[in-house]
Length: 265
Image 1 (cartoon, rainbow, N blue to C red):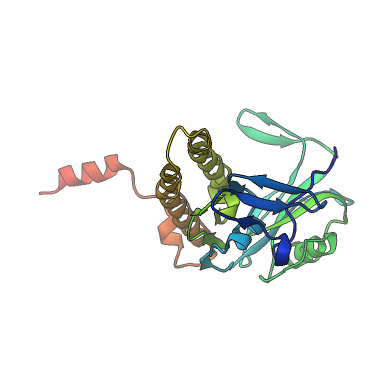
Image 2 (image 1 turned 45 degrees about the horizontal axis):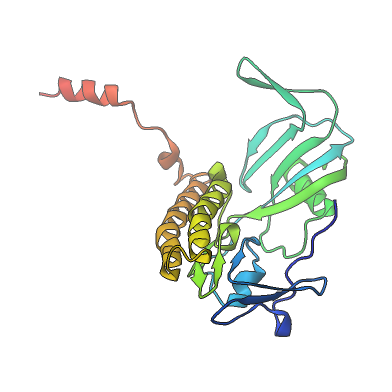
């Protein structure tokens, strides 16, 4: 697959420039483009957001985890583990579900998720990072090798102060970043695109006034704000802390409470 040119660096003359009629963008291969509007869908480190000067207030990460698809020289016990560091999981890429239970196939690459002991890594994750994190938790790295991919995620929680600055708009992770608990990031980003897409089309076709684009922030910012609060609560509830266990304990069923109430004098 041919690699497509990306947005150029933010600093200096190559940063996107906007005026009253459009936005000029210079790509990494030297091409220049001009459009009426520019939508930043370029992730949590969004160059578009930075170039537009849109702030991303919020909270720094408190946990950091690695997730990877790798070969393993040793066969680990496939499990989900909770300890003082966090949550960890070992599984297989290939599996089947029988009678509601996951049955992993023999051999093949493994899937690993391990919480790192320390937060603050800034570079791209490496096989060595994964090996070291596994040794801390399991006492061995199971001979991990031949990584298909390795990724790092944290519970950093931030949201763009504005989803629009004149002719630049933000959607998806460029507008909001949070822990992946609940798998809500993709849904929220797609909903951003659905909300913005038709409005942008209306404005570009001169069917609706430009002020219609202001409703994008008004309608979507509050939705992502709720998602951020929800994921922060989820992260707090899975911390290995005795003080959080009562919060995660299921309440008695309503029928039990009803029967007790009926028995009261």
